Length: 134
Image (tube, rainbow, N blue to C red; front, side, top):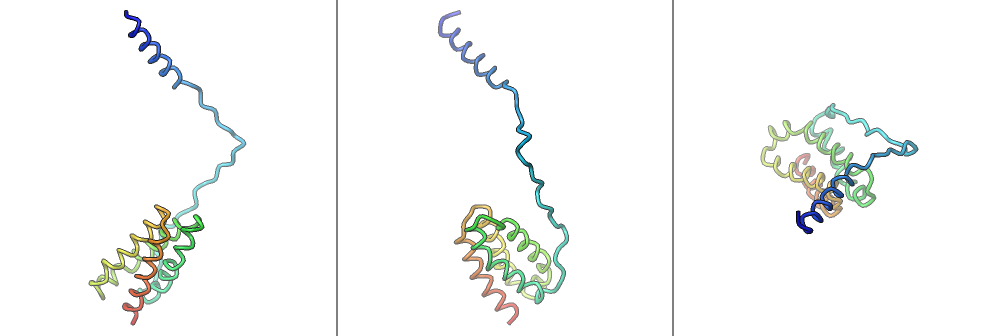
Protein backbone atom coordinates (compact mmCIF):
# COMPACT_ATOMS: atom_id res chain seq x y z
CA UNK A 1 0.00 0.00 0.00
CA UNK A 2 1.43 3.34 -1.00
CA UNK A 3 1.63 6.33 1.23
CA UNK A 4 -1.05 8.21 -0.78
CA UNK A 5 -3.50 5.31 -0.63
CA UNK A 6 -2.97 4.96 3.13
CA UNK A 7 -3.66 8.65 3.58
CA UNK A 8 -6.79 8.41 1.45
CA UNK A 9 -7.98 5.38 3.44
CA UNK A 10 -7.33 7.20 6.72
CA UNK A 11 -9.32 10.24 5.53
CA UNK A 12 -12.19 8.00 4.39
CA UNK A 13 -12.29 6.17 7.72
CA UNK A 14 -12.16 9.45 9.66
CA UNK A 15 -15.04 10.91 7.66
CA UNK A 16 -17.09 7.72 8.00
CA UNK A 17 -16.67 7.52 11.77
CA UNK A 18 -17.32 11.23 12.25
CA UNK A 19 -20.78 10.69 10.79
CA UNK A 20 -21.52 8.20 13.57
CA UNK A 21 -21.66 10.79 16.34
CA UNK A 22 -24.55 10.24 18.73
CA UNK A 23 -27.68 12.36 18.42
CA UNK A 24 -28.72 14.30 21.49
CA UNK A 25 -32.10 15.90 22.06
CA UNK A 26 -32.62 18.99 24.16
CA UNK A 27 -35.76 18.22 26.16
CA UNK A 28 -35.92 21.79 27.47
CA UNK A 29 -36.82 23.09 24.01
CA UNK A 30 -40.56 23.38 23.70
CA UNK A 31 -42.17 21.70 20.75
CA UNK A 32 -45.38 22.96 19.28
CA UNK A 33 -47.87 21.02 17.29
CA UNK A 34 -48.77 22.17 13.83
CA UNK A 35 -51.96 24.20 13.72
CA UNK A 36 -55.03 22.21 12.88
CA UNK A 37 -56.11 22.49 9.30
CA UNK A 38 -59.66 22.43 8.13
CA UNK A 39 -60.72 20.13 5.34
CA UNK A 40 -64.21 21.61 5.23
CA UNK A 41 -64.73 24.10 2.43
CA UNK A 42 -66.48 27.38 3.17
CA UNK A 43 -70.18 27.23 2.34
CA UNK A 44 -72.06 29.79 0.33
CA UNK A 45 -72.53 31.20 -3.11
CA UNK A 46 -69.95 33.14 -5.06
CA UNK A 47 -71.80 36.32 -4.11
CA UNK A 48 -71.37 35.38 -0.43
CA UNK A 49 -67.77 34.19 -0.58
CA UNK A 50 -66.16 36.57 -3.07
CA UNK A 51 -66.16 39.55 -0.66
CA UNK A 52 -64.54 37.33 2.00
CA UNK A 53 -61.99 36.07 -0.51
CA UNK A 54 -61.29 39.64 -1.60
CA UNK A 55 -60.67 40.71 2.00
CA UNK A 56 -58.17 37.84 2.44
CA UNK A 57 -56.38 38.73 -0.79
CA UNK A 58 -56.21 42.41 0.13
CA UNK A 59 -54.67 41.53 3.50
CA UNK A 60 -52.01 39.21 2.05
CA UNK A 61 -49.33 41.82 1.39
CA UNK A 62 -49.25 42.99 5.01
CA UNK A 63 -49.10 39.39 6.24
CA UNK A 64 -46.26 38.56 3.86
CA UNK A 65 -44.29 41.63 4.98
CA UNK A 66 -44.90 40.74 8.63
CA UNK A 67 -43.89 37.14 7.96
CA UNK A 68 -46.86 35.90 9.92
CA UNK A 69 -50.14 34.33 8.86
CA UNK A 70 -49.46 34.50 5.14
CA UNK A 71 -49.47 30.72 4.63
CA UNK A 72 -52.77 30.37 6.44
CA UNK A 73 -54.28 33.23 4.45
CA UNK A 74 -53.15 31.62 1.19
CA UNK A 75 -54.77 28.36 2.30
CA UNK A 76 -58.04 30.15 3.08
CA UNK A 77 -57.95 31.83 -0.34
CA UNK A 78 -57.46 28.41 -1.94
CA UNK A 79 -60.41 27.08 0.08
CA UNK A 80 -62.63 29.96 -1.02
CA UNK A 81 -61.67 29.32 -4.62
CA UNK A 82 -62.35 25.59 -4.28
CA UNK A 83 -65.79 26.39 -2.85
CA UNK A 84 -66.84 28.76 -5.67
CA UNK A 85 -64.91 27.34 -8.61
CA UNK A 86 -67.80 25.27 -10.00
CA UNK A 87 -70.19 28.23 -9.84
CA UNK A 88 -67.70 30.57 -11.50
CA UNK A 89 -66.97 27.96 -14.17
CA UNK A 90 -70.70 27.61 -14.90
CA UNK A 91 -71.61 31.32 -14.83
CA UNK A 92 -68.43 33.00 -16.13
CA UNK A 93 -66.07 30.42 -17.66
CA UNK A 94 -63.95 33.20 -19.17
CA UNK A 95 -62.98 34.33 -15.64
CA UNK A 96 -61.73 30.98 -14.35
CA UNK A 97 -58.13 31.47 -15.50
CA UNK A 98 -58.06 34.95 -13.98
CA UNK A 99 -59.22 33.65 -10.59
CA UNK A 100 -56.67 30.83 -10.78
CA UNK A 101 -53.98 33.42 -11.50
CA UNK A 102 -54.95 35.34 -8.35
CA UNK A 103 -54.93 32.19 -6.22
CA UNK A 104 -51.53 31.12 -7.56
CA UNK A 105 -50.09 34.62 -6.96
CA UNK A 106 -51.26 34.48 -3.35
CA UNK A 107 -49.64 31.09 -2.79
CA UNK A 108 -46.45 32.30 -4.47
CA UNK A 109 -46.41 35.42 -2.31
CA UNK A 110 -46.69 33.33 0.85
CA UNK A 111 -44.23 30.62 -0.18
CA UNK A 112 -41.54 32.93 -1.55
CA UNK A 113 -42.08 35.91 0.76
CA UNK A 114 -42.98 38.26 -2.10
CA UNK A 115 -45.39 41.04 -1.07
CA UNK A 116 -45.37 42.43 -4.63
CA UNK A 117 -47.13 39.26 -5.80
CA UNK A 118 -49.75 39.76 -3.10
CA UNK A 119 -50.26 43.38 -4.20
CA UNK A 120 -50.67 42.28 -7.80
CA UNK A 121 -53.16 39.61 -6.77
CA UNK A 122 -55.16 42.19 -4.79
CA UNK A 123 -55.39 44.50 -7.80
CA UNK A 124 -56.57 41.66 -10.04
CA UNK A 125 -58.98 40.33 -7.42
CA UNK A 126 -60.60 43.73 -6.93
CA UNK A 127 -61.25 44.00 -10.66
CA UNK A 128 -62.51 40.41 -10.86
CA UNK A 129 -64.96 40.78 -7.98
CA UNK A 130 -66.27 44.04 -9.43
CA UNK A 131 -66.74 42.42 -12.84
CA UNK A 132 -68.31 39.25 -11.40
CA UNK A 133 -70.71 40.86 -8.95
CA UNK A 134 -71.44 43.88 -11.13
